[in-house]
Length: 275
Ligand code: FES
Image 1 (tube, helix red, strand yellow):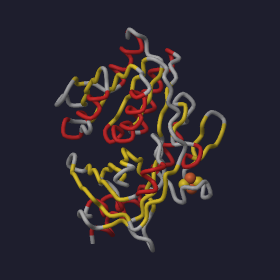
Image 2 (cartoon, helix red, strand yellow; image 1 turned 90 degrees about the vertical axis):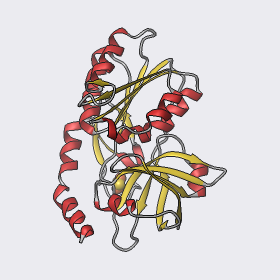
Image 3 (cartoon, helix red, strand yellow; image 1 turned 60 degrees about the vertical axis):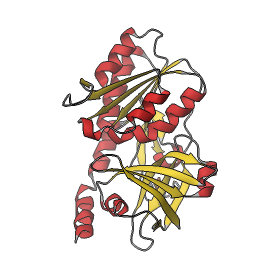
Image 4 (tube, protein in one colour; image 1 turned 60 degrees about the horizontal axis):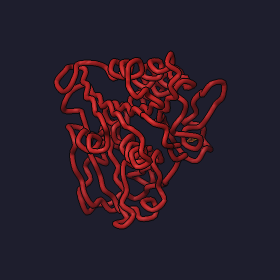
């Protein structure tokens, strides 16, 4: 059992949980995720990236948006209650090196998995520019935490309610075109459509671009095939081969189509949970 030590609400639907998970806290690396199961008999497993960890306290931090049946159920947990199963750390750790100037692009809740990557990039001495984007001001998360790590932090919102009224691709393209020092690497984490267009933005400049995919997962150990994606000419499993891949090779259209295929079942699950 994993006791909920601290619960915070970061925005209308986004929660930050600090949970007891000593073994995961000791072993996790940036980029890795856990599978969370709220009901051992009937519950689905959902992948959540480990946003932070405190090995001394034996805790991990998970940040999630309460949009599906399981995440809505999670959001009702109170401090002192427990989650029955957290499996991990899973997935390949981020490949992070000192490369020079790195731009981290976060869309909405994507700021959560980006945070440990930004921490490690900074620790290794990279120059760090962070772009945080959301539909509106109240959906921005971890702005202060990322600002504390970054040399520059740019905020964009779709409606202009915070920062510049723009999509993340606009400042990204300007940085690719004009930045001094030039951009050596880009990390992008956010909705698939945002990652697709961010990767298309960096492609003409041949800037290595890493994206983190969050797909449908069932077993999380490479056995069910639920998380398969097409990378270049190859089929890869996000849970064991990822979650990070070369953004210029990901077939985002295929991935988005697969994510849509369970919409009907997801809506049903949400309805059942509300009853
Ligand atoms: Fe089953 Fe990845 S979740 S193979």
